[in-house]
Length: 540
Image 1 (cartoon, helix red, strand yellow):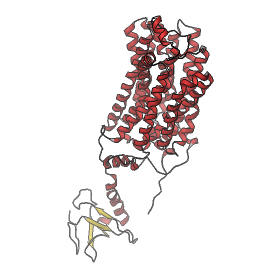
Image 2 (cartoon, helix red, strand yellow; image 1 turned 120 degrees about the vertical axis):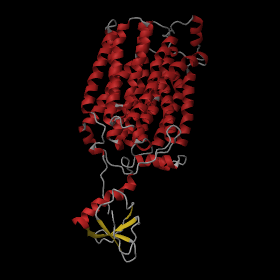
Image 3 (cartoon, rainbow, N blue to C red; image 1 turned 180 degrees about the vertical axis):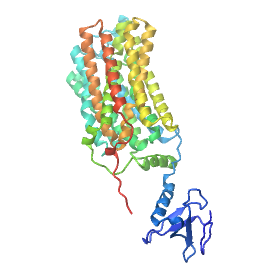
Image 4 (cartoon, rainbow, N blue to C red; image 1 turned 90 degrees about the vertical axis):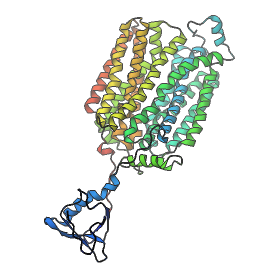
């Protein structure tokens, strides 16, 4: 290729082009010998000797055609892929682990009452323990005892979900407007302080305890919902599965820790110390949260420049500083949003049954004592936490290597998270009293359900990243409704038909899972929806 530059040099790499008498100069840095340089151009030099692209074009090309050829070259410098920052030694993974710890503490504060209730009421005698141990557990100094009927106990245990349900949609909206750091910090502190107040509230009366649990549920609902807004600014698209699964796996690890530790604390220190310990841990974690977390990686003083540039550049097309009004009407008409809602409904339906009724199922099938029951019931939660983290890494592996598209990955992991637990749970009633068979299938059913963390439970971040917090709150509300219905229906089935109750329960669960999965596979998507895109304005 030959270039004729009167008064200039042919090896110049900086070319200035006159744009239609607008006197605007655009510097284009590009080698003249590049194979992508526009062909058949005559390059002339102005009086100053600097090269200039003239309007005279050989081959019959017009100035407009010449501009179209040069436009992608001028944009190449801005389209270079960002350099990837380190993974596990990076601040964003440390932040995800901090969220994981927050979720562990909130779940511990929420579920510890399920086991302390055994020693809080005088109508419950721990199974399989000698009388001397029972008297020691029921000592009025370490373990105050209350005369609560089963109905009152049920209201106390479920009261935490009242506040949780009420707060979902409002906090999903306000987390887009106000500082997530302050919202989560305040909610975590409130939940921890109420945990410290539960023992004296129980001594005053059950009404005070129910009120405390309701407020605590609202605080924990704030923590559980507002945290998803964090991933909008902190999670690069190709790492969303890993980061979100790492943080949300704390919801699965919390019950395991509670089931293992609470019994030991009750025996040695008394049941009030369970609430004092978890409450104090929450207060300490709150201080750590306020010190380490910032709403935007751009403002964090400790994050490396390389990681900051990697995060911001990978999200430049999805995150905007401007706040747009919520397109409620478009969301309600969006089939992908309905697919996520139905998928979340089915996940909560099955997960709530497996979490709430596993101890009862083990007791009815294996007839073990309380300590053994607690340990066996904790195993599905432990393996679910492990599989949830692995699912996040595996889903991102498929995306980074371009093995599967985002839509295929989300549907694949949703199918595994809804279909496999249904299959394993349906097999449970046919295992009879086989100890190892029941334990293994319970673990498989609980562990495989966490595959949904790489599927439907993160799908809202794909279709509408700027409205992720609100959509997550909305779909979680629908999911919790499914969980409340499933637990209520299961209780009615167990009461009316004890002989075939488990078979009916798991068959209904499998039918719900399959129906929801089919709907999700048909209409689910993982591309940003038109109503979720930012309106672009071109500036000259």
